[in-house]
Length: 143
Image (cartoon, rainbow, N blue to C red):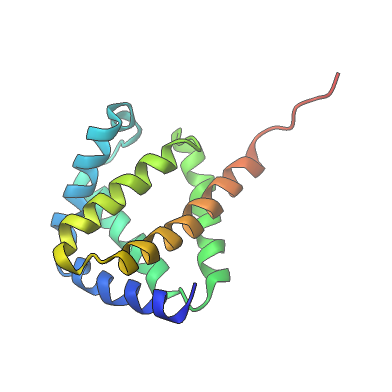
């Protein structure tokens, strides 16, 4: 990520963190609207899940200057999410819900540059999570 993308992410996340409960509620409402089959994957109360989501995003933003930390943490998240039933195709839906939420939460501050920065950051996160999940899949036995 470029220094300017990191700056866009840090600045915009500060704005989103100020409305974190509303942002998390918007995110999950949109996620379940886009794919209602995801709802049963969430066993805990959505408000508590929203706090975890915002903490995870905060961790990513705080460590953008150290991408190896982000990747390591996201790989661990990816392994855990596999156990919850998350599949690789779900990450596209999560990304769409995230960008939609950011657009609603940031309003006119959600510029093309901010969108691109968040898209890049989510690509890093989802790529690490999917990679870790794929590493866990049993190898097919050649016949």
